[in-house]
Structure formats: C-alpha cells, structure tokens
View (cartoon, rainbow, N blue to C red):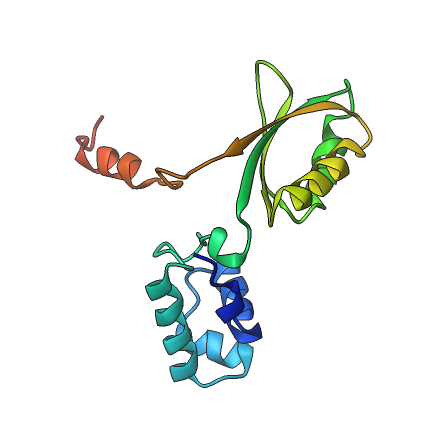
Length: 163
C-alpha cells in the first residue's frame, strides 16, 4: 500500500501538525496551514479513510509514507556514554523510539527505513555515535498488533474505584 506518491506538501504538513498535537481543532489546523477549515477537514477524512492516519491521531501507517522497513535495534554502549548515545539517537530522524533496557544490550530502538539500503545507512549512523560498541538488528516482517493502550484502559475502567 504505497500511497506516498498521492500525498502532497499540504498532506504532509497536516500530518506533522496532527502528530505534534492530535487534539488540534480543524479550524486551528486550517489557520496554521493557511487553508480553509473545510479543506483541512476533507484532507483529514481522506487520510483516515486511506489508513495513513490512524484514528488515534498520532499513529501513522509508515508503509504508506514510504517507510517499508521497520527494524528493532539493540545497542551495546560503552560505560558512561549512555547519555551521549541517547542524545545522538535523538538527532537521527529514522529513530522512532528509544528505550534503556536490561539484559543483552543497553539500549533498544525502533528504526524506520525506505528500503534495506536506507536501513543500512541508518545503522551506520548509529554505529558512528561515540560510545556505541555494537548493534544487533531484527527486521519486522509484519505488524499484527499496532501499539495500543485501549486494553489497559478497559481493564482499569472495570476495576472498582478503591482497587
């Protein structure tokens, strides 16, 4: 489902603003982007209908945006270099999230890439960060359950108030 070619600059700017503030009102978005409220509303509806924008307002279909490869990277970091590595990862636009972990490795991150060559370039950028000793990369083949919090909230909503 490669829809990137159907997205124009307004679509991309609208998605960026929705990711930054998923609660933004359509009228605010229109004003911010310099378009009519109805234009912003119709674009949002189309992005939702095509599945590029998921109903949460923050989650995007990466494949539809041209990022066909998702990888999970475990990074081993030299002692005392953790803060610097995390700061460096923050500067890499393909790094979607970073977690300090226990077990094998010190840091885990999710990386998006347009293809395997693009992933290789991103991994080389990670390896160039001062303090990175080695990485281990696992490719995601298919997303069966996207990131979700609804089940947790449903469970909490069912608990008695004093629990």
